[in-house]
Each structure stands twice: as C-alpha cells, then as structure tokens.
Image (tube, rainbow, N blue to C red; front, side, top):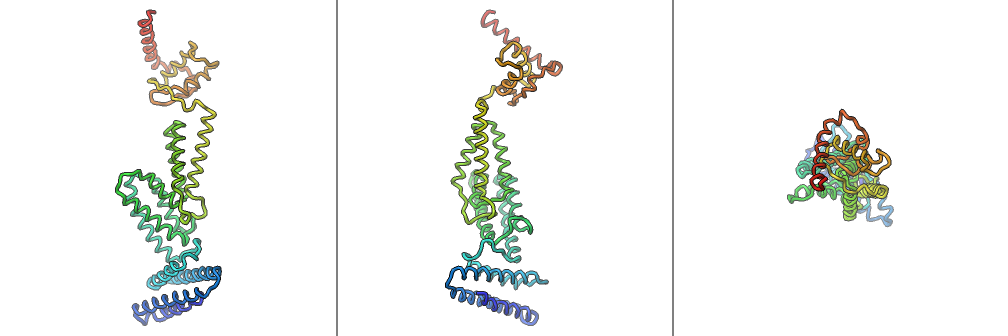
Length: 368
C-alpha cells in the first residue's frame, strides 16, 4: 500500500514546481486526479494481502505517512490552502474506507486538528447559548466548554486523537437535539444523561457534579431522605450505561463509574452513621424561641430536674439534638451550658411572661 503513495508525492512535487506557471484550476484538477489514482492504487494493493495482520499494519503505516506528509505541507511558509484542502479531503476518504483498521489512538494531522477545532467550537458556542436558557447549572456548562477547549490545547490531557473526531460530532449532535427540544422537561437531568451515555468522563465535570451532590444532600439534612435520593440516583444510573466506543478520555474510567463509586461510598457512610446514631433521623421539636430564650428554658429546666441526665453537659447535648430554635436551627450544647446574665437579660422578660402564663393556666385548670 505504501508504494501507492508515489503517485501523490509526484503530483505534489509537480504542483509546487509549476504553481507559478500553470493556472490554479488546472493544477487543482491534476492534484485531485492524482488523489483519486492514489486511492485506487492503495485499494488494489490492499486486496493483495492474504493475512489480516499484514493488511492492518499496512493501513496504519500508510495513514501515518499521509498524516506526516500533510503536516510537512502545513508547516511550509507560506502554506498553500488549496493543496492542504485537497489532501485533507483525500485523507478523510482514506480514513472512511479503512476506519475499522485504524487505531483510535492515531493522531490527526495538524491541519485536520485546526479544521476540527473551528467546526467543533462553532457548534459548541451555538449550543451553549441555548442550553443556558434551559436552566442547566452554569458550572456544568462552563466545565463542558473548558473540557472541549482543552482537547485542542497542546500539552493538556487527554490528547486529541483520531477517535475524538467521531466522538465530538456524535456528542454535539446529541446536545443540539436536546437544545432544539421545546418541551418542558427536567433539562438538567437530561443533560446529565447525555453526558453519561456518551461517556463525557472529564474529571473536572465529575468534580462539579460531586460538589452539587454534596450541596443537595446538605440541604436535605435528613438522613433517610438523603438515602432515598441516592438510591434513586443509583437505580437511574443502571439505565444509562455508556456506549463502549464513545469516550472523552479513553484512559479514564467512565463517568457512570465515577458517579456510581461516589454514590455507593456516600450511601455506605450515611448508613453507617445512622447505625451508630439511631436518633439522627428522629423528628426534632420546633420551638418559637430564640437561642437566648432556649438557653433560659434549658437552664431552669435543668435546675428543677426536668431532664434525667447525670450532668448538665449531657442534658445540653440531648436538648440541642432534639429542640430547634424559631429559625429552624439547632443550638450548640456549649451555648446552652453558658449562663451569661447580661446577655440573657432581654430574653428573661419574655420567658418570665411565658412561665407566668403557664402558672395562670395551671391555677385556672386545676384550681391550684
């Protein structure tokens, strides 16, 4: 197959030699004809292989030579855009014909990378404008943009490979279809499903998802509710298994794997905490008192032995765990232990009034 490239090389040399003398149109036609002849000759030579392994090796070697030739032409100054375009078209036809033989880790020519970058970022910017209107978290979209731009940045991992061209086209098409959907849906969940199905396993995106998960769980505060939320997410993931051939970063585990590991670890931690502290999920008492009023109630309640605990600290810890202030917050047991009269003076009037009302009602109801 390698021998077939001499047709193309001679045509390129002729193009360069006669570029100033011949018309651009005639040179273009001659070069296109040479590309067609080269592909035909390559195909004829390919058919002569009787062993699959030899054919595969020849296809991959030929692709590397074509890529190197294209890179050499791209690095020339000034670079000839027509020459680069025609050769790029030929290489794409070659890749289409022999795609099953090519390694997914093969590199694209720098010219192909440049063209791919222009096409991908144009589509990405357009789809992001619409996705922002669907109230998908801004951090998700920012991480998506950063990750795709990173593919085209030299020195950053993962490196752009041959497999990314097909991956990015398919992945962006899925996002564009979702963006065009006018129905009223939970777009954040659907967005996540696309990223899971197409294995957008960028570690930065996973970290943003993990941070949002932590925020959702802390907002719930209730362990049983958190368990239910996580169990539902775990079940949901089982229905969204990524296609093996698609991957943002082929060297990393899938996004679904990252998510499943996080959910399982968090579930285990919550389950262990509930087992060690059975009272964690008991419903707290909601009061109408502020922290100072609660401190006074606890202080005098402990003095008259309302609480059956051997020490004031133990009583304060129990009181703190089960009684919330009017703002819905639990008061620290350390706060309840303190008895700072100047600080508590204002609250003493309201508590005295409430206790007085209790005494009045006791007298009325029981004739005391």
